[in-house]
Image (tube, rainbow, N blue to C red; front, side, top):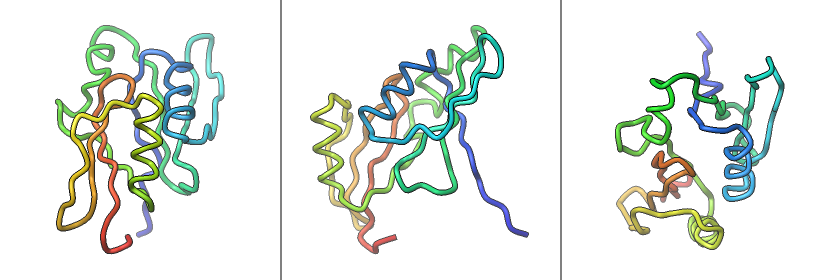
Length: 132
């Protein structure tokens, strides 16, 4: 069996503000932005160089989905962004106004800090010691 996770949905308030955050603040690529109806779009973003897994920016519809914006993991870290140069990315994000809720720490596995996306979902920015 050969399977891969290809998309992870992130519930957003607005397509364009989410695209701006991910592309301008985090430096992600806009992979696709296809209108599906007058109110729905298929929007994929990913870190530069990512070949398989993309974020699907899914605009919330209805009160229940809107209540999940920014809290998709109940306050825990939701997504993990591996980098090959922790301080390059940490300093770039901080300079662009990305909010870090936990400062960089050196752990046995690598260097990590926790930041929030524009809605409050928590992410680990991580550089592993073993080069993975």
